[in-house]
Length: 359
Image: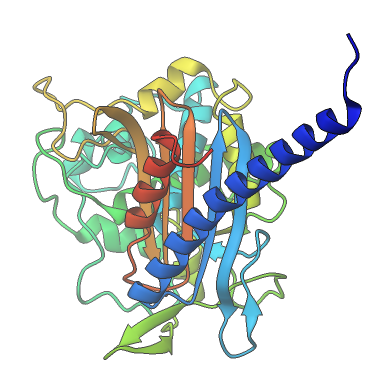
């Protein structure tokens, strides 16, 4: 039987055009949604990562990284992490646990012998899960004063525990700040150097680093806030407060793609350690904590889907990462507007991919 090559060619060409148009329509659906949400929330810039099973599906920038210089967001653009950085601090602790240098049931007084008597009841596990009774920065705390690490520790030590450790849940930045000092005590290294040496460098996360206002850092975005509906530059804080372990990193979606891919492997931690981080920590009475928090991650079920996620907010930036565990889908949304809601964007985009509306 003879084959009509001209007909076959036209059929293939028609298919290519059809599927190209279909793919373009899908892409436009994501683009249109992101752009409409940026306009609605008045977000200057967004970086979006979508990956499946560690493979990047989409890494794209939208809007402006710097309004004054009219610099667009691109995949390389660096955003401040906010509390999304807590998962790296928690990972560092778990690395030290696996090496036998820290135990999760260690009391804090093992590392800080002169700490208050109440710290004898506080364990590393409880700091990781926000069940230690630690609180947040007090209203009297001066965000523009430079503190030494020891001065910060003394401030934390003077704040009474909000509840008996292990009996309740309350989100605490000071708890993770303290974990960073524990890492320093155990390793002899500033926690940021330990992250660089044991996490960022091995994974090729070459742009991720501790924040610095002084250093010349390529691709750094500017942070903004809305004041009476008008965009303003972020307020500044002291250099010290941009180096603490509660969330003081620069990163971009390209490095976070490497991070996400590594979480499917045993390169950094055993699977059993990762499962601990992604399981709601229990209180001392055996009940799961009310915050649905593991170690550095919130654990949730949305519309029947099991998710580990975290949001961050700091200095004119708002960030969000969601990992849909059973679907092996990860969505990261980084924005340079304080008070924005990247979680809404993340949830909607995840649904678009999970429902098959886009591929």
